[in-house]
Image (cartoon, rainbow, N blue to C red):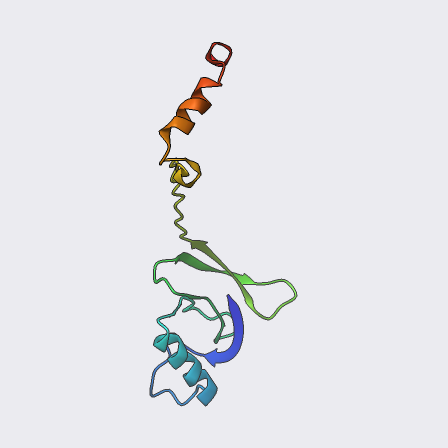
Length: 122
């Protein structure tokens, strides 16, 4: 959410609209070129859309409403809902480190197993 101070009377702005500045037009082109969405289409200050809400997902913002003037400000207060989906994938795998084993000499493994007091372990 940002107060860009570009004055838009409608969104999306009309390409033949001479009311927007060159910088505002370039800003809109940049949004389009980078596949961003601007969601505010209601005036946020007098009859202009000054406050913009930009996302990279078309359905991320919904139920956008104007709550009226913000106390002490000349801008309106906006309320919206944000659709966020997260996933937590946990992959629990055991990995054995065979680099530490003496695979060429099974006798060493056998000797290690023989020194264990199995009665005590179990």
